[in-house]
Image (cartoon, rainbow, N blue to C red):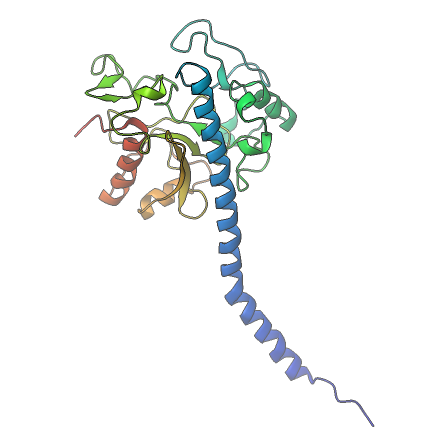
Length: 280
């Protein structure tokens, strides 16, 4: 007796059904995978943030130098002058001078710079400096904002319009944890997931309604951030304009929002970095 097999038509129908099911299930599986990576990234930020708090506790309330050094590759020194005098950089030089075009230092050089940084004794695990969905080959994908003892740059703090670090009860350039009073510690950002290694600290204008560094679109349509009080959170951008700028291969710096929704995204970030807006 002959065994009955599938006809060609039946086989094609089965293949078509499997293809349809895969098309339906793959987006859900990809979202679940991304949510897992987002959660891992949030955990990294949480641990970096707790290390940042521990550093301040061990240093009489003084927070770590928020700039990444930009000098000799793989090393980390301690400045002897300027606003960061005697404050070792939180990480050493792990960023290539050609980072804007995608050039990278060797991975072992990057790791050497991370291990030499001031924060590493408080969080001695290289993998915590890297988001699971960061740019391939980048050993550090997180940065500290300018306001948290970062770079005091021209165009953000301008001597003709701003002569100190305090506006009312809001301290803009924070040197001590106790200075974060208004708004409170749960509202001021420390770390941000850029997804790639960059020099110095994350720049956001205070005096002007424009981005300095671009909005970074990570883990879907937002980015992960951590706050002075120790919690981390996922922020979703609301404007398609913000998303389109942030998703560029080399996102545009000094971008001025063209819509109210995009302006809302910018001002949300500015308030979280500085505690307030420096313009009306």
